[in-house]
Length: 570
Ligand code: ADP
Picture (cartoon, rainbow, N blue to C red):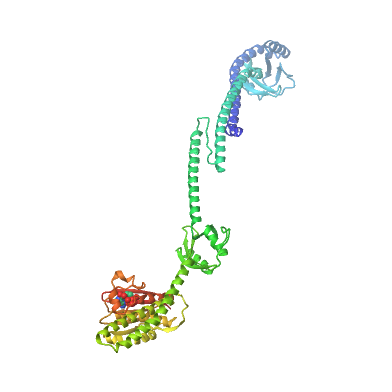
C-alpha cells in the first residue's frame, strides 16, 4: 500500500525531476562550452593574426621547410596546433597531423574568411583528430597580397574538462535535493497510507456488518474529517439498523400472534411472507418461496387475487378449505404484490346455521297453534255478544299478525339457507299482471288506480315464485301506505339490467329512514305499521331475493310518493 502510494504520487514526479536535472546540467555544460569557445575564439583570432605576420616572410619566399620548423618550434612552446594553408587551400604544414595526407582546406569557413582578409574562428568536429576543435585563422600577407592563412586549433576537450567539477557539484546537489524530496515524500506517503489503512480496515469491517468499527487517526491531517464522518455514519447506521431490527421483531411478534392467516405475495404470485396462523391453516411447515396456487388450489382464491391485482382494489370473498370457512381479504400493495388476510369464520357460520335452524323450527312450530287460535277465534266470533266479540276480534287480529310474522320469518330463513334458485324465462309484464290480480280488490276498496307501463318488453331468467314475492311485497307496501292517487309499475331496461319500478303517490319515507327500511323488523312508524298489518320484514325479503338474483333494490322517496326500483341482470 505504502509503496504503491509512493510510486503513484511520486514515481512520475521523480522521473520528471531527474529528467529536468539532466536537461539542466546538459544545458549548463553546452552553454559553458559555447561561451568559452566564443571567449577563446576572440583571443585566438588575435594570436592567429600575430602568427600570420610571423609566418609571412618565409611563406613569401616559399621556404616551406623553414616554415615547418618555425611552426613546430612555436607549437611545442605554446602547446598549440598550428596549420599553415596556402592561398589555394593546400595544407603546407600541420603540427598535429601529417599535412601530406590532409585534404584541401578550401571549404573551411575560417580559411575562406582569411582569404577575404578577415581573421575568424569556428568550432567544428575534427575528422582528422576525432574531437571538437576551435579553429582561428588569419590571412598571411606578402606585398599587400594574401598568400595564405595561418590557423590555430584548440582542442575543446582541454577546455571542457574544466567544467566537470562544476557539473559534478551541481549533480550532487541535485541528487541530494532529490533524496531529500524522496524522504519527505516517503514520510507523507507513510502518513497517508496509515490513514488510508485505518479507514480501509474500518470500512471493511463495516461492510462485513460490524458497525461498531470506528477510525481513530494518529495524524491530524486531511483524513481526520473523513474519519469523523465515517464514525458518524457508522454510528447512525448502527442506530437505524437497531431500530429496523426492533421494528422487525415487533412486526414479527404481531404477525405471529395474529389469529388470522396472513400472506404477502409478490408480482409473480410467490409468497414473500406468511405467519404462523397461515401455516396452521394450510398445515404446511414452510410456505415462503412457494407460489400461492401450490398452497391454495381453490379456484375462488386465485380469482380473488387476480381481480385485486387487475383492479388495484381491495377484494373480499369467502373460501372453504379443509372443511373450514374463511373470509379472504385481498389488498394490493402500492408496489407490486398483494397482502391476503384469512379470517376463520367457521364458528360464526355454525352459529348462524344454528340460529337459522332454531328460527325456522320455532316459526314452524308456532304456525300450527297460531292457525288453530285464529280458526277458533273466527268460529267464536259468530256466537258471542257484541262486547265479547270485540275481545275475540282482537285475539283473531293478533293471531293473524303473528301468523304473518311467522310466515315472513320462515320466508327469510329459507332465503338465508342459500338454496339454489329455480330459474326460468320470465316475461316481466306477465309477472306484474299476475301480481296485480292479487291486489285488485284492495285497490278498488281504497279507490286507487294501478297501471303497468312497459317501456320495452323485457324477459329475464329468474325464480318466478321468489320474484312474485318481491312484487307482492312492493305492491303491498305501495297500497298500504297510499291513501289517494295510485300505483304505477314500470318495466324498462338498461344495457345490462332489467329495471322494474313500483311508484306510488303515498306519504313517502323521510330521507333519514330510507337507508334503514331494508333492515329486518325496521319500521318507520310502529303503530301505523302494526295497524296496517306490517311485519317490518317485507323489504328485507325483497332485498334478499334481489341479491340472490345478483340484482339490487333502491328507493327514492319524497312526501309526494315513493319509488322502489329493482334491477335484475339480463
Ligand atoms: P312493513 O311490513 O312494516 O311494511 P317493510 O319492510 O315492508 O315492513 O317496510 C319497512 C318500512 O318502510 C315500513 O314500515 C314503512 O314505514 C316503510 N315503507 C315501505 N314501503 C313504503 C311505501 N311505499 N311508502 C311509504 N313507506 C314505505
